[in-house]
Length: 279
Ligand SMILES: NC(=O)c1ccc[n+]([C@@H]2O[C@H](COP(=O)([O-])OP(=O)(O)OC[C@H]3O[C@@H](n4cnc5c(N)ncnc54)[C@H](O)[C@@H]3O)[C@@H](O)[C@H]2O)c1
Image 1 (tube, protein in one colour):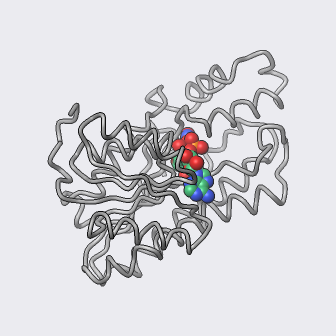
Image 2 (cartoon, protein in one colour):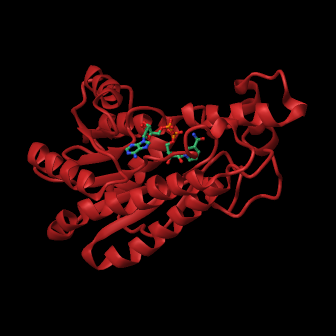
């Protein structure tokens, strides 16, 4: 496997939500390449299939676990399935997220549906994922929960790069995700369960494509640009290292938080964003 730390997570198992594509897929692939058996979780079987096939084609171990993070019952059932397949769960990565409600690309200002959907998926989805796995982790007095938030949940850097307010529910939900990780870390520390948070910066995934399409539609100065060019401009304007991140960049940091090297780290939120936001 093309990873120099192939043994780092040998014998471990991990559930990754929203793992059918984008960042979740990158996380699942990296954790698998380091020896963990992966429960690839996403909202449909079809969404899970590509990542499962990718991991298996690299010689890794993976199962599909269809689940909707907005439902506690669904996450409980997914956890039961992982435990019956793998026998135990060491790592849960709460990655599934949405930028807004359907039609986000067309809107300049947020709607009630944007607030509802970002709250249900990006905030309640975290507690549903955590609450499903916590009883098992408490019983074993071991576990790692890793929340994927965003540097968009940090205090803004003061540059308004996009028109309108349609992204406000998303940023608010990601600030909540960071705070959720802090609060959960305190609750679970006595049970020897570490909770940390990764705040990705700017990655070209279907999510960022929606942001770029929205930006082109509403900023007259950018009319005629391709969404990918808007993405490149956003990075140039905001990122000291001058490049976007890849899903595997995020996966490697998640692997670190999941590893024995991070056993004394809990309640931390780490930007992986090329320096775009430094707090
Ligand atoms: N792309 C970026 O630049 C960026 C930056 C910072 C943070 N993030 C965060 O990283 C995470 C992944 O983002 P991405 O860019 O890969 O997004 P994406 O839209 O490409 O993928 C999101 C995945 O989550 C799944 N999902 C959505 N709703 C779900 C639900 N109710 N239950 C289960 N799965 C569900 C989707 O099916 C999809 O596979 C999100 O939490 C996002 O907020 C992304």
